[in-house]
Image 1 (cartoon, rainbow over the protein chains, first blue to last red):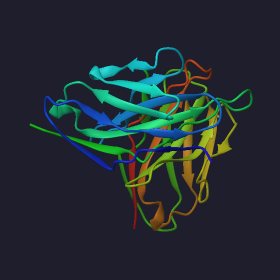
Image 2 (spheres, chains in turn purple, cyan; image 1 turned 90 degrees about the vertical axis):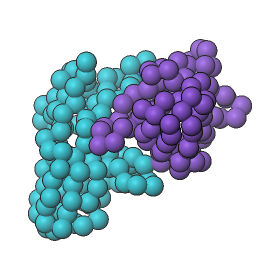
Image 3 (tube, rainbow over the protein chains, first blue to last red; image 1 turned 180 degrees about the vertical axis):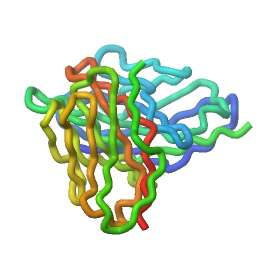
Image 4 (tube, chains in turn red, brown; image 1 turned 120 degrees about the vertical axis):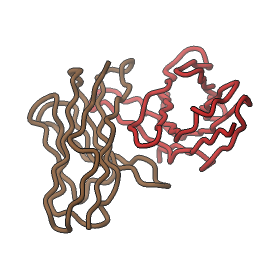
Length: 117
Length: 114
């Protein structure tokens, strides 16, 4: 079965420290990988995606993610956390489909990031 | 900027009522999606559509139906609302094609069924 796992329900970080939000996936074929963020009472916003090429992907708000094929992981990182980064983060994977419907995103359950001053 | 709008931010309905949730996107996207979001469960796909009048079931279609009569509008229908359908409902849209398949989300509708 195809799936995405976010092993941590919550991550707590002090402002200014580096942060990592973990994601692992299990899909057939070459996956497209995504990170989305949800601020309180808002819809999801796209942060970054990996399709192919360089394993380190840079996205919005200073975030980056590293694709590791051997570990089937796509962890989200930021060198220096801000209080305003506090939000719910979702990892998602889109299995590549040949023809037919376009394929859909499979979302993880989300990780709540809390950055304290 | 892509804009996805949902007809209501908050909605309260009674058990057994028929409920319509409307979603409109203004970027001529082919694909549209309806998810529900529940704490600890993440986002679960209810239905999606990749063309006008086309629909496909997602992971949890039971108790829901959809309508897509125009490209920009995708409606989610709860034929007879039940308390276990109390949730946050999120609509999304995307282009087709491998490189452009990023989903854009609306602000969500928080539905409470009493």
